[in-house]
Length: 162
Image (cartoon, rainbow, N blue to C red; front, side, top):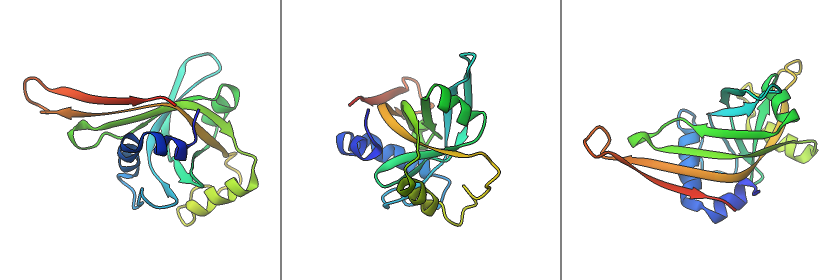
């Protein structure tokens, strides 16, 4: 498993595509010290079925976090497995990471996450039962489609594991 910064160091081109795709639709600079984005996260329900919903991954302190409310929070607390997929980009560019989410109880990380999303309304409802999780990255992949819409369209894919 790797932190976000370890992933960036080991697979900078894949991480760069992911940062851009995750932040499309936001006013964030993925090259900044802290940023947040939008993607879809799949988790595993207690009965073993998948649960898919949008999330806002938050990068700060060299780590990637998400804030989750029930039922996603409960899924991550019970199992921890996740897959995060960004919205498609130009030429149907794709980015996906997968790994294990770990509940964060370390106050400096919690405060850094809150500061990274200050003014957005995220993490502002004390009654929401949100919990912050760090996303360890166990594998990643990206792809871009060549000659989209033409005969012979194909994907150029890359993958990474620590």
